[in-house]
Length: 300
Ligand code: NAP
Image (cartoon, rainbow, N blue to C red; front, side):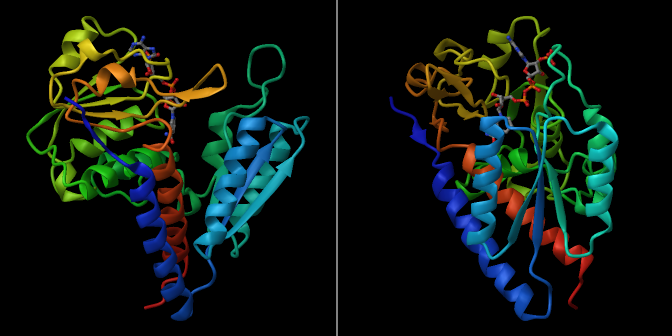
Protein backbone atom coordinates (compact mmCIF):
# COMPACT_ATOMS: atom_id res chain seq x y z
CA UNK A 1 0.00 0.00 0.00
CA UNK A 2 1.35 3.44 -0.88
CA UNK A 3 0.92 6.16 1.74
CA UNK A 4 -0.79 9.43 0.92
CA UNK A 5 1.87 12.08 0.33
CA UNK A 6 1.42 15.13 2.57
CA UNK A 7 2.42 18.01 0.31
CA UNK A 8 3.98 20.59 2.61
CA UNK A 9 5.07 22.69 -0.33
CA UNK A 10 1.49 23.15 -1.52
CA UNK A 11 0.17 23.93 1.97
CA UNK A 12 3.04 26.37 2.54
CA UNK A 13 2.21 28.16 -0.73
CA UNK A 14 -1.42 28.44 0.43
CA UNK A 15 -0.36 29.93 3.79
CA UNK A 16 2.08 32.34 2.12
CA UNK A 17 -0.70 33.61 -0.15
CA UNK A 18 -2.96 34.13 2.86
CA UNK A 19 -0.21 36.00 4.73
CA UNK A 20 0.45 38.18 1.66
CA UNK A 21 -3.24 39.10 1.49
CA UNK A 22 -3.33 39.86 5.24
CA UNK A 23 -0.20 42.01 4.93
CA UNK A 24 -1.86 43.94 2.09
CA UNK A 25 -4.96 44.57 4.25
CA UNK A 26 -2.85 45.51 7.30
CA UNK A 27 -0.88 48.10 5.33
CA UNK A 28 -4.06 49.38 3.67
CA UNK A 29 -5.62 49.95 7.08
CA UNK A 30 -2.70 52.16 8.13
CA UNK A 31 -0.24 49.61 9.50
CA UNK A 32 3.48 49.83 8.64
CA UNK A 33 5.07 47.41 6.21
CA UNK A 34 6.08 44.46 8.42
CA UNK A 35 9.85 44.10 8.68
CA UNK A 36 11.86 41.00 9.56
CA UNK A 37 15.57 41.44 10.24
CA UNK A 38 17.80 38.38 10.12
CA UNK A 39 21.18 38.62 11.82
CA UNK A 40 23.74 36.46 10.03
CA UNK A 41 27.15 36.02 11.63
CA UNK A 42 29.95 34.50 9.55
CA UNK A 43 29.98 32.75 6.19
CA UNK A 44 28.31 29.37 6.80
CA UNK A 45 27.00 28.42 3.30
CA UNK A 46 23.84 26.65 4.54
CA UNK A 47 22.94 29.63 6.76
CA UNK A 48 23.47 32.00 3.81
CA UNK A 49 21.01 29.95 1.74
CA UNK A 50 18.44 29.85 4.56
CA UNK A 51 18.66 33.60 5.11
CA UNK A 52 18.39 34.30 1.37
CA UNK A 53 15.32 32.05 1.11
CA UNK A 54 13.68 33.78 4.06
CA UNK A 55 14.40 37.19 2.55
CA UNK A 56 12.90 36.17 -0.81
CA UNK A 57 9.84 34.74 0.90
CA UNK A 58 9.41 38.06 2.76
CA UNK A 59 9.55 40.01 -0.52
CA UNK A 60 6.85 37.85 -2.06
CA UNK A 61 4.59 38.37 0.97
CA UNK A 62 5.01 42.16 0.96
CA UNK A 63 7.22 41.98 4.06
CA UNK A 64 10.53 43.83 4.22
CA UNK A 65 13.23 41.20 4.72
CA UNK A 66 16.50 42.71 5.88
CA UNK A 67 19.73 40.85 6.51
CA UNK A 68 22.33 42.24 8.87
CA UNK A 69 25.65 40.56 8.07
CA UNK A 70 28.39 40.46 10.67
CA UNK A 71 31.87 38.91 10.33
CA UNK A 72 32.72 35.63 12.06
CA UNK A 73 35.15 37.62 14.21
CA UNK A 74 32.23 39.42 15.90
CA UNK A 75 32.41 39.36 19.70
CA UNK A 76 29.59 38.37 22.05
CA UNK A 77 29.20 41.95 23.32
CA UNK A 78 28.91 43.35 19.78
CA UNK A 79 26.27 40.81 18.85
CA UNK A 80 24.26 41.50 22.01
CA UNK A 81 24.48 45.25 21.27
CA UNK A 82 23.36 44.66 17.66
CA UNK A 83 20.29 42.74 18.83
CA UNK A 84 19.56 45.41 21.46
CA UNK A 85 19.72 48.04 18.68
CA UNK A 86 17.13 46.08 16.67
CA UNK A 87 14.95 45.78 19.76
CA UNK A 88 14.93 49.57 20.01
CA UNK A 89 14.23 50.18 16.30
CA UNK A 90 10.46 50.67 15.84
CA UNK A 91 10.74 49.89 12.11
CA UNK A 92 11.91 46.33 12.89
CA UNK A 93 9.04 44.07 13.95
CA UNK A 94 10.68 40.65 13.91
CA UNK A 95 14.26 39.63 14.77
CA UNK A 96 15.84 36.34 13.82
CA UNK A 97 19.36 35.35 14.85
CA UNK A 98 20.40 32.72 12.32
CA UNK A 99 21.72 29.58 14.02
CA UNK A 100 24.17 28.00 14.37
CA UNK A 101 26.46 30.86 15.34
CA UNK A 102 30.06 30.30 14.23
CA UNK A 103 32.22 28.21 16.52
CA UNK A 104 35.57 29.40 17.86
CA UNK A 105 37.40 26.73 15.87
CA UNK A 106 38.08 24.68 19.00
CA UNK A 107 34.93 22.62 18.81
CA UNK A 108 32.92 24.90 21.07
CA UNK A 109 30.77 27.87 20.09
CA UNK A 110 32.47 31.20 20.44
CA UNK A 111 29.14 32.64 21.53
CA UNK A 112 26.85 32.15 24.46
CA UNK A 113 23.93 31.40 22.15
CA UNK A 114 21.37 31.33 24.94
CA UNK A 115 22.37 34.78 26.17
CA UNK A 116 22.08 36.20 22.66
CA UNK A 117 18.66 34.67 22.02
CA UNK A 118 17.52 35.92 25.44
CA UNK A 119 18.39 39.46 24.32
CA UNK A 120 15.71 39.40 21.61
CA UNK A 121 12.67 41.41 22.73
CA UNK A 122 9.89 38.82 23.32
CA UNK A 123 7.52 41.02 21.26
CA UNK A 124 9.90 40.67 18.28
CA UNK A 125 10.79 37.04 18.92
CA UNK A 126 9.31 35.55 15.73
CA UNK A 127 11.18 32.26 16.31
CA UNK A 128 9.40 31.94 19.69
CA UNK A 129 12.62 30.97 21.47
CA UNK A 130 12.40 33.42 24.37
CA UNK A 131 11.48 32.02 27.80
CA UNK A 132 8.48 34.37 27.86
CA UNK A 133 7.05 32.96 24.63
CA UNK A 134 7.90 29.38 25.60
CA UNK A 135 6.17 29.95 28.95
CA UNK A 136 3.07 31.39 27.31
CA UNK A 137 2.84 28.34 25.05
CA UNK A 138 3.31 26.05 28.03
CA UNK A 139 0.38 27.77 29.74
CA UNK A 140 -1.83 27.36 26.67
CA UNK A 141 -1.97 31.08 25.79
CA UNK A 142 0.71 31.42 23.12
CA UNK A 143 1.77 34.70 21.57
CA UNK A 144 4.12 33.39 18.88
CA UNK A 145 4.18 29.69 18.05
CA UNK A 146 7.55 28.22 17.04
CA UNK A 147 7.66 28.02 13.25
CA UNK A 148 8.43 24.34 12.55
CA UNK A 149 5.92 22.80 15.01
CA UNK A 150 3.35 25.39 13.98
CA UNK A 151 3.89 24.45 10.34
CA UNK A 152 3.24 20.81 11.23
CA UNK A 153 0.07 21.76 13.10
CA UNK A 154 -1.10 23.67 10.02
CA UNK A 155 -0.27 20.76 7.73
CA UNK A 156 -2.29 18.33 9.86
CA UNK A 157 -5.16 20.79 10.17
CA UNK A 158 -5.33 21.58 6.47
CA UNK A 159 -5.12 17.90 5.50
CA UNK A 160 -8.05 17.21 7.86
CA UNK A 161 -5.93 14.95 10.06
CA UNK A 162 -7.13 15.01 13.65
CA UNK A 163 -4.94 13.72 16.45
CA UNK A 164 -7.52 14.28 19.18
CA UNK A 165 -7.53 11.25 21.47
CA UNK A 166 -4.78 9.64 19.38
CA UNK A 167 -1.32 8.61 20.46
CA UNK A 168 1.39 10.86 19.01
CA UNK A 169 5.03 9.92 19.47
CA UNK A 170 7.53 12.76 19.01
CA UNK A 171 11.08 11.48 18.60
CA UNK A 172 13.40 14.33 19.65
CA UNK A 173 13.23 16.76 22.55
CA UNK A 174 14.96 19.88 21.23
CA UNK A 175 13.75 23.31 22.31
CA UNK A 176 13.16 24.20 18.65
CA UNK A 177 11.10 21.24 17.48
CA UNK A 178 10.48 18.26 19.79
CA UNK A 179 9.46 19.94 23.05
CA UNK A 180 7.18 22.65 21.61
CA UNK A 181 5.68 20.12 19.16
CA UNK A 182 4.69 17.83 22.01
CA UNK A 183 3.33 20.74 24.03
CA UNK A 184 1.20 22.05 21.16
CA UNK A 185 -0.36 18.69 20.38
CA UNK A 186 -1.16 18.02 24.03
CA UNK A 187 -2.98 21.33 24.63
CA UNK A 188 -6.40 20.97 26.20
CA UNK A 189 -8.29 23.48 24.08
CA UNK A 190 -8.05 24.85 20.58
CA UNK A 191 -5.32 27.37 21.34
CA UNK A 192 -2.97 25.95 18.75
CA UNK A 193 -5.66 24.76 16.33
CA UNK A 194 -8.63 22.78 17.64
CA UNK A 195 -8.20 19.94 15.16
CA UNK A 196 -4.72 19.05 16.31
CA UNK A 197 -4.96 19.42 20.08
CA UNK A 198 -5.99 16.85 22.66
CA UNK A 199 -3.48 14.21 21.60
CA UNK A 200 -1.87 11.82 24.05
CA UNK A 201 1.80 12.54 23.53
CA UNK A 202 4.94 10.53 24.21
CA UNK A 203 8.34 12.22 23.85
CA UNK A 204 11.18 9.87 22.89
CA UNK A 205 14.90 10.66 22.77
CA UNK A 206 18.34 9.08 22.64
CA UNK A 207 17.92 7.44 26.06
CA UNK A 208 14.51 5.94 25.30
CA UNK A 209 14.39 2.17 25.79
CA UNK A 210 12.51 0.13 23.17
CA UNK A 211 12.22 3.01 20.74
CA UNK A 212 10.88 0.71 18.01
CA UNK A 213 8.06 -0.54 20.20
CA UNK A 214 7.11 2.98 21.28
CA UNK A 215 7.12 4.21 17.69
CA UNK A 216 4.96 1.27 16.60
CA UNK A 217 2.34 2.32 19.16
CA UNK A 218 1.96 5.73 17.48
CA UNK A 219 -1.07 6.74 15.46
CA UNK A 220 1.05 9.71 14.45
CA UNK A 221 4.84 9.58 14.50
CA UNK A 222 6.87 12.79 14.33
CA UNK A 223 10.60 12.38 13.78
CA UNK A 224 12.86 15.33 14.72
CA UNK A 225 16.13 13.59 15.36
CA UNK A 226 18.79 14.68 12.86
CA UNK A 227 19.91 11.09 12.12
CA UNK A 228 19.40 10.17 8.46
CA UNK A 229 16.71 7.51 7.89
CA UNK A 230 16.83 6.13 11.44
CA UNK A 231 13.05 5.52 11.55
CA UNK A 232 12.69 2.29 9.60
CA UNK A 233 9.54 0.81 8.08
CA UNK A 234 9.24 -1.80 10.84
CA UNK A 235 9.04 0.98 13.46
CA UNK A 236 5.79 2.29 11.97
CA UNK A 237 2.28 1.10 12.76
CA UNK A 238 0.37 0.26 9.55
CA UNK A 239 -1.73 3.28 8.54
CA UNK A 240 0.05 5.75 10.85
CA UNK A 241 0.64 9.38 9.92
CA UNK A 242 4.39 10.00 9.65
CA UNK A 243 5.84 13.51 9.82
CA UNK A 244 9.53 13.74 8.96
CA UNK A 245 11.15 16.91 10.28
CA UNK A 246 14.73 15.83 9.56
CA UNK A 247 16.86 17.63 7.02
CA UNK A 248 20.13 15.76 6.58
CA UNK A 249 22.62 16.15 3.77
CA UNK A 250 23.90 12.75 2.60
CA UNK A 251 26.07 12.53 -0.54
CA UNK A 252 24.83 15.95 -1.62
CA UNK A 253 21.19 14.87 -1.30
CA UNK A 254 18.68 15.92 1.35
CA UNK A 255 17.20 13.02 3.29
CA UNK A 256 14.92 12.93 6.28
CA UNK A 257 15.03 11.08 9.59
CA UNK A 258 12.63 8.50 8.14
CA UNK A 259 13.60 5.78 5.65
CA UNK A 260 11.03 7.06 3.17
CA UNK A 261 10.91 4.14 0.72
CA UNK A 262 10.21 1.64 3.51
CA UNK A 263 7.93 3.94 5.48
CA UNK A 264 5.64 4.81 2.58
CA UNK A 265 4.73 1.13 2.20
CA UNK A 266 3.46 1.00 5.80
CA UNK A 267 2.24 4.48 6.70
CA UNK A 268 -1.19 5.87 5.89
CA UNK A 269 0.23 9.32 5.14
CA UNK A 270 3.76 10.70 5.09
CA UNK A 271 5.67 13.91 4.45
CA UNK A 272 8.48 13.79 1.87
CA UNK A 273 11.94 15.33 2.33
CA UNK A 274 12.39 17.77 0.72
CA UNK A 275 8.98 19.33 0.15
CA UNK A 276 7.37 18.34 3.44
CA UNK A 277 7.94 20.23 6.68
CA UNK A 278 10.73 22.53 5.44
CA UNK A 279 8.62 24.94 3.34
CA UNK A 280 6.07 25.25 6.16
CA UNK A 281 8.69 26.62 8.55
CA UNK A 282 9.30 29.67 6.36
CA UNK A 283 5.56 30.19 5.83
CA UNK A 284 5.00 30.31 9.59
CA UNK A 285 7.90 32.73 10.02
CA UNK A 286 6.08 35.13 7.69
CA UNK A 287 2.91 34.58 9.69
CA UNK A 288 4.77 35.44 12.91
CA UNK A 289 6.34 38.56 11.39
CA UNK A 290 2.92 39.89 10.44
CA UNK A 291 1.64 39.02 13.92
CA UNK A 292 4.58 40.89 15.47
CA UNK A 293 3.87 43.97 13.34
CA UNK A 294 0.20 43.82 14.34
CA UNK A 295 0.99 43.48 18.06
CA UNK A 296 3.37 46.44 17.90
CA UNK A 297 1.00 48.56 15.77
CA UNK A 298 -2.64 47.79 16.52
CA UNK A 299 -4.74 49.40 13.78
CA UNK A 300 -8.09 49.04 15.50
P1 NAP B 1 18.62 18.41 17.93
O1 NAP B 1 18.57 19.65 18.73
O2 NAP B 1 19.93 17.82 17.57
O3 NAP B 1 17.78 17.30 18.72
C1 NAP B 1 17.74 15.98 18.28
C2 NAP B 1 16.92 15.15 19.22
O4 NAP B 1 16.91 13.81 18.72
C3 NAP B 1 17.49 15.09 20.66
O5 NAP B 1 16.44 15.22 21.57
C4 NAP B 1 18.14 13.70 20.73
O6 NAP B 1 18.03 13.10 21.99
C5 NAP B 1 17.27 12.91 19.77
N1 NAP B 1 18.03 11.79 19.22
C6 NAP B 1 19.27 11.81 18.67
N2 NAP B 1 19.63 10.57 18.31
C7 NAP B 1 18.61 9.75 18.66
C8 NAP B 1 18.39 8.36 18.56
N3 NAP B 1 19.31 7.54 18.00
N4 NAP B 1 17.25 7.86 19.02
C9 NAP B 1 16.31 8.66 19.57
N5 NAP B 1 16.45 10.00 19.69
C10 NAP B 1 17.59 10.53 19.25
O7 NAP B 1 17.84 18.55 16.56
P2 NAP B 1 16.62 19.51 16.09
O8 NAP B 1 17.07 20.92 16.05
O9 NAP B 1 15.37 19.18 16.85
O10 NAP B 1 16.46 19.01 14.60
C11 NAP B 1 16.13 17.68 14.29
C12 NAP B 1 16.13 17.50 12.78
O11 NAP B 1 15.14 18.36 12.23
C13 NAP B 1 17.44 17.88 12.10
O12 NAP B 1 17.63 17.05 10.98
C14 NAP B 1 17.20 19.30 11.64
O13 NAP B 1 17.98 19.66 10.53
C15 NAP B 1 15.75 19.23 11.28
N6 NAP B 1 15.03 20.51 11.34
C16 NAP B 1 14.22 20.79 10.30
C17 NAP B 1 13.48 21.94 10.32
C18 NAP B 1 12.57 22.21 9.18
O14 NAP B 1 12.25 23.34 8.91
N7 NAP B 1 12.11 21.17 8.49
C19 NAP B 1 13.57 22.83 11.38
C20 NAP B 1 14.39 22.50 12.47
C21 NAP B 1 15.11 21.32 12.44
P3 NAP B 1 18.80 13.66 23.30
O15 NAP B 1 18.00 14.86 23.75
O16 NAP B 1 18.74 12.54 24.25
O17 NAP B 1 20.18 14.03 22.85
